[in-house]
Image (cartoon, rainbow, N blue to C red; front, side, top):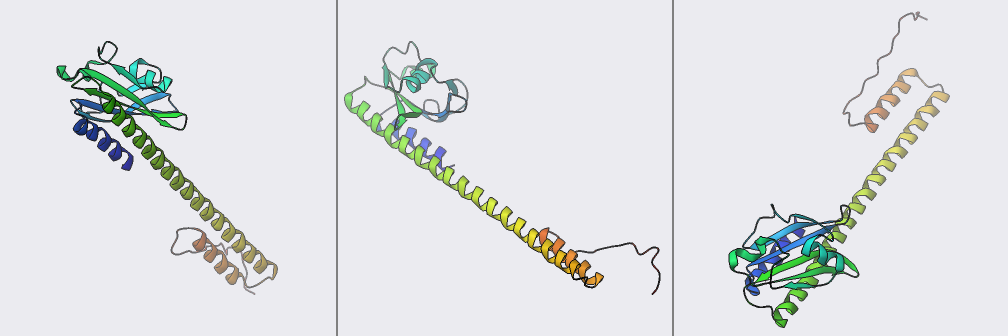
Length: 212
């Protein structure tokens, strides 16, 4: 989808422009209170395996989401081995993706040289842009879902109103004591209109009737 593509582009840009051996991005699943890996670029591009799902507050990545504060580490003592990128990494930086006061995800990268102020500033700016993009896509999804629900409700209401109107028409016909065949035709037409049927038929038992 559009969101997943945007997140992939984000981590690839970090690897290319910040000379990062590895960049990864998680989104917070608020229902499960956990982070779910959505994009990875560099030394490990798969979004399966270790670190795919991390509880908020668990480990370094979960701690960033819980504390809503950036984190740096040059020793890798508390990080998964994947961040070492086979010895190519010398430092790690993680940034929470914030929308107002909510953490919607975590962006992390390893670096092949000691962290600099410029690198952290660039990572922070990337995180802010990604957070805004995530929120925009989610709002668009919510708006689309709301419009779909409104259309379904309108359709169901229209169908209910047609049914009431047709039943009212049939009832008036019965009260006027119009011809039985005409009433039958009205019932058939109502059934066709209220269902996906293309044709309708009405069968009734005439056993026991006498000729006039």
